[in-house]
Image (cartoon, rainbow, N blue to C red; front, side, top):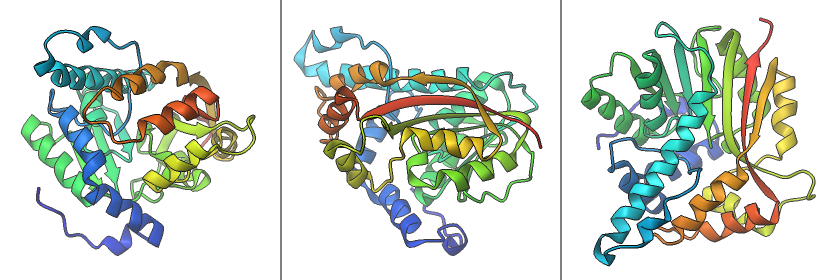
Length: 290
């Protein structure tokens, strides 16, 4: 994969942002999972899955069991992206969407295929930008789906230019108040923001050791659930739908423990979800005012 060579100083403004970018540019273990699942149909995701798995994949010939597992895990991850897109509202071919923290482009391509609109993905990983833009060229949609080496806290895109924005498991790397300030600026009045994220449960009081382990593994800063709503309220984003996906994602993680691609994060995720200290939420919010 050809790496890009832009002026990284304008995008990666803190040592923390540089460390996050380095992780996603160079981490072979987690990247191996995303690569293997993406090879199923060419949609490369950087998030987890939801829904009832087909447990029959565990049966049958042993020599093809892992192949069946990979396909089923990928199906569940694609189902998660489909659910997110279901909540973007009325999107027309002339609209423009943004994928905040776009990874290697899976959901962006799904959005373009579904709505026929322009999609801009932004990520601080130069490797991901190069990979995703090559995918766009191979798919013949480079004129409609573009990926940019930009910081989603300060994209440089025009004010009010976007009908919709989504983030899919990327908000734990940034300050939510800064992020939603930028998203509110970018959205047209009545535009829609959809977020799927893991967050800590305020009620349980403090984060569990499992949540702390996840934080340390990914070098992220998992936010408490309440902070999402405070940051939205401060930036003219009004939630219209909040869905707790925790129960829907647990079967995905249980199935993943059976895969040769398991990385060791499965146990902390399952422990945190089952003990109630961690939640998997989807929040859809509308931009109000100007």
